[in-house]
Length: 210
Image (tube, rainbow, N blue to C red; front, side, top):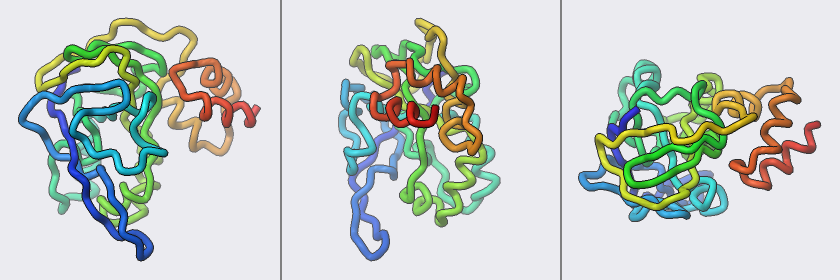
């Protein structure tokens, strides 16, 4: 897996339910390396810090491999890397192969897989309709957030290399499916609530499902 693009955003104003809001979902490819900090990406807009950024969502990664699926559905959009709001676009990233808690070397940084992206209304606005949220969930390949264990620069061409596989974990794909499925797999819930690569608040919420 390699970095195909690094992407950041400037603040963009949108209108939602008659209110003016600011978002950082409109990311564009950068021409220079980006720096991954413990709480986010230098120079990248994070408007709603209650649900974005911070330790467990410091950087969002998405796979180039999934672009073809979405381009077929939305051929008239202006397609560039960063379209899904990702900071890093990777080649050959497969959510069925990465596990919550896995540690990877990424450029000069060391990162840990934390949680999949859960789509919100801003994703729907960018794609032109709120039905896109349902499509995103049904497709099942949401990319992943990472925690920054060691800060560092990342640039196009850098490798995404596994350093340490998490033990007794579930894949990002399994966790995303668990979040949205009606019939909750209790075995997967138990794996999730014992995994400190997930934020405590999310694990406490899952405990209530047992």
